[in-house]
Image (cartoon, rainbow, N blue to C red; front, side):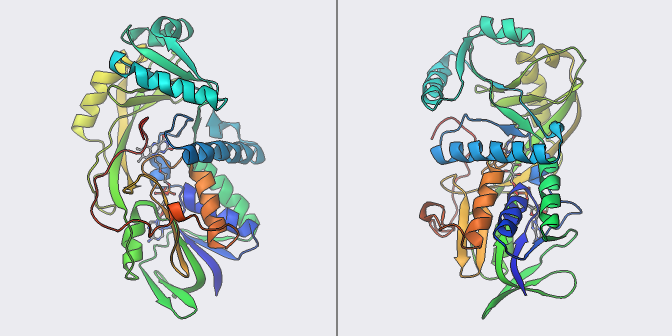
Length: 378
Ligand SMILES: Cc1cc2nc3c(=O)[nH]c(=O)nc-3n(C[C@H](O)[C@H](O)[C@H](O)COP(=O)(O)OP(=O)(O)OC[C@H]3O[C@@H](n4cnc5c(N)ncnc54)[C@H](O)[C@@H]3O)c2cc1C
C-alpha cells in the first residue's frame, strides 16, 4: 500500500509530491498526460508578480520565487526564469488604483515605482505608443517563469528521492474503504493510505466519483503567441483598462492574453483553441501597448481550464480522513504554485497543521459567480 498518492502532475501536484517525499513518505504521482506540467501549467503566461490583493498570496509568491530560483540553480538551467520586470498601465480613471498599490508595495519593501508615460518611454521606447495620460507602475522584481520546465526538474528531483511517477495514467474512480482509498484506472486498482488530489480543473469531477463535492467551477483562459520583428525591448506589460497583458518571449515572439471566459466549462470538452473575438481583441489592443505590436501576427493561440472558488482562495486540506485536495487556483496558480503545492504536500502528510480558512469544506458546493482571481481589487 502506498503512503501517499498524488493525483495530478501540474505545478501544484509535483510540488506537493516533492514536499511529501522530503517528509520521508513513500509517494506515487499519477498523471493523465504523457508528461508532467502538461495542462494549465503548460498553457500559462508564466507571470510571477507581487501585485496581488491578498497578503497570503503575496507570501506564497515570495516563497515560490525562492523555490523557482533554487530549482533553476539545482538544474543549472538559467532559462527557466527571466527577471523581466512588469509595468502595469492605468488610464486616468484607474490612476488611484495604481497609487494605492504602489504605496502598499513600498510599505512591504517591494521595489515599486510610479512612472509617467514619458519616463517609461524613455526607459522602454517600445512603450511610446501607449496613451500619454496613462500612469505606469514599474515592478522591476517581477519574473516570467517556464512552469513546465520547473515541473520536469522537480519531478526529476523527486524521482531521485524515490517518488514513482506514472504518466499516461488517468484515475477514473476513487473508492473510500476502511483503512484505504482505492484508485481505479488503467491496470490493477491502487491502494493508498492517503490521497492528495491536485487535478486542477478536474478535481471536482474526480472527487464526485467517491460521492464527495467541492465549491469549484472550471473556466477557460486563453493566450496567444505572436511573432514580432527582432530589435524590440520591452518588459511584461499589463493594461488595466483592457485587461490585456503581454510577455516578451525571446527576440522574435511575445505572449498575449486577455481571454478569460468567466462561465463554467467542462474540462474534458472545452474548446482548446483561441476564440475569434479573443484574437480580434488582441489585434486591437496589443498595438496600443508596444510598438512591436503594430506588425505582430498571431502564430498560435490556445485555451486552458482553471478552477474558480467562491472566495477566490484555494481549497487545501482534507475532504475525508484520507482524501485531501489542493485546487482552486483561480487563474493565477503558477506564481503561487510551488509554495501552495509544498504546503498541500506537507498538510497531507501531517507535517503542517490544516488551515481552517483554506478548508475545502468551508463553503457549500453551490453555484456561485466566477470572478477573476488576478485583479487589483479585493
Ligand atoms: C492561458 C493561461 C494563462 C495563464 N497565465 C498564468 C500566469 O501568467 N501566471 C499564473 O500564476 N498563472 C497563470 N495561469 C494559471 C495557471 O496555469 C494555473 O493556475 C496552474 O497551472 C494550476 O496548476 P495545477 O497544478 O493546479 O493544475 P494543472 O496544471 O491543470 O494540473 C492538473 C493536472 O492534473 C491532471 N489530472 C486531471 N485529472 C486527472 C486524473 N483523473 N488522473 C490523473 N491526472 C489527472 C491533469 O492532466 C493536469 O496535468 C494561466 C492559465 C492559463 C490557462
